[in-house]
Image 1 (cartoon, rainbow, N blue to C red):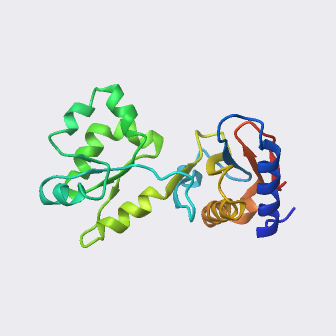
Image 2 (cartoon, rainbow, N blue to C red):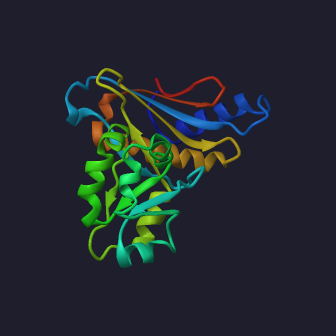
Image 3 (cartoon, rainbow, N blue to C red):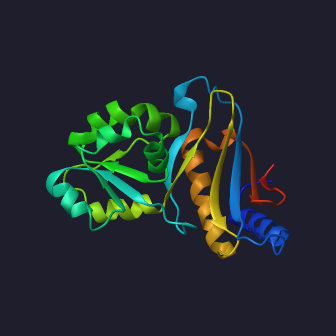
Length: 213
């Protein structure tokens, strides 16, 4: 089954219809992409993508590592500001580390090295190292993009599959379809279309429906 907007839309509608009314909570709509023909022992073949969704089901909170004037300005647009003085408290506090993983992370260049030293072992394996804020960047635009972004990554050396949430069942099917296409196209750019073997869509507790199989 070739990938088209129509086949994506059909799978989305089938998944939502299958899960409708079965649960007392609002289910997420999940995307699974199975890859083939790639050697995941090679780091360059592993996926660690940050993808902006056109219609995010939920905006991610954003935290920034910054000092001085940059920190002052950031307070108006981010959810959490972490200064260089705050960083040591994250080094051994497991609860703080776990909480930090819920955020999309940004950092000013002067703090990147310190963040890497203190939190690299925690953030890097999760694909959560902060994005550097380049000089003359528009902070509000960066934060808006971060709020709408999801992380799509392969896990381990021998697991050729990626999973991500592309919507919730109360989101319009057309919007979920656009989110699916945004993710799939980003994966295509990284791996090439021939490396994508199967694509499935399902709700949290529902059956899987094939887009490409």
